Image 1: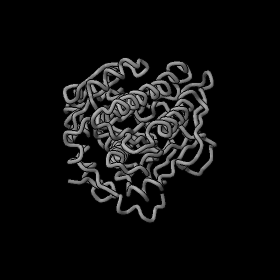
Image 2: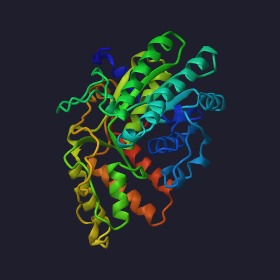
Image 3: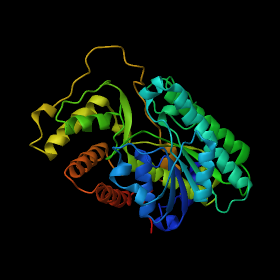
Image 4: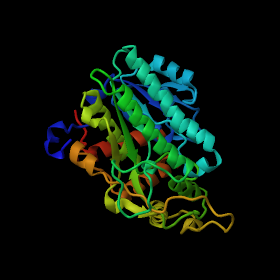
Length: 387
């Protein structure tokens, strides 16, 4: 599709559209899934979530999201669990986020990683296929969330476009590349005729935000160390990543879902949602800024938390990409989507979230307040919040 005639297709994120909309959300107990569940519920959607049990320390538990959605515990590696969730949700829109999301963990759990990220995606899409074949009322939009690491990373300075080949050095990255191939095959084979649901895949950068407690992720590791009064340890200080607040990516996913639901077949493709070029920063820049913001917000924070250290020497760490950037020209030009937060603003929101919640503030209220602030800031972009 040429970009020149797409302005008429640009729409705003519409809470009215989502009011009463039946949504199935896999992975709703995870970090991104929890934020997306909160956003959807805040707009009036009827959300059914399918996921493994939440971790004891998680945004899902802190914000009591189980009170807001139909909460189903199940494993996407089990086709019967996926089918049961479909029957319970009778969805009009499916967001597939459930995944094994960690690069380093994939080295020690390759079978689980591939079974979840590849075969789990097959299970979800086959449930969509069978629902469509049976004429289940309403299923019209499917959005599969993969990763920027799905691209064959050539360690070059140029950002990756949606047309670049899929690949992956490690089990996690290659499983996401393989999931993209599965999605493309299902789109071509089952979702390519009039009256069928439309299917898109979306690839975000390194999403960050309050309430992320995952192990072996930079921001959660920094937060845990700062809360414990310790100097953070960082593994790969010169690695460059496309950092972005979680709400930036989720806003893009919601826009794509609206386009798919409205039958715009050009939206049924792969999409990048990443930060501005200047927000692809090295790890040591993030660590320096987070420590500084932490002390700016709390001058009485222990002096032991100033600065950061490298881990002590030991076994060589597993391979991780040194540089990775996304080209988001397509989303900018066709959707009118733009980031609303700069990276310093995103980091400030993370520090404020954890400082408020750490002092006893209600995690759901803090999260909804940050969501409302984000939507107001986003009102000046092409992805503006509609009525």
